[in-house]
Length: 130
Image (tube, rainbow, N blue to C red; front, side, top):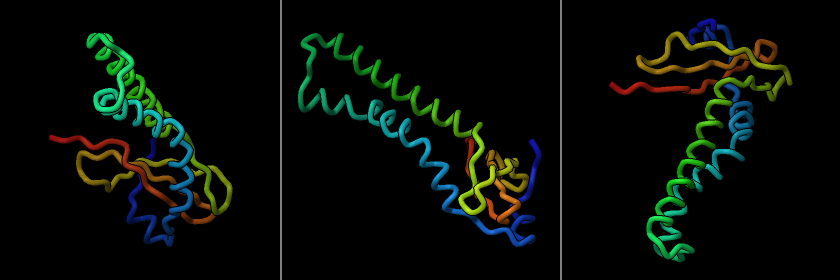
């Protein structure tokens, strides 16, 4: 993957395209929201409201299965988002993907650039904590 500095884009007159970033992230809500609900919601619901299981072992197993399914959905959405190509809202053309060369240390960040409309947006892919 090619590297590009954000400062170079700004110097060349590129502007941030927030509408394209929102549209790109909106594509993955259908996976992330149910995944987060499966991870977080079953425990308080079954603990304080109603539990369909009389056996505590079955109850714990069901909670673990819900958590793992939700985690898998969120992980799948993040993996798919990191590999997909967004479409510019300004020009309708596919955006080019670059690795940001001037990103903070221990951070992997992608730059999505549309050269036709001279717009860009960034997404943080991973942050390594030391």
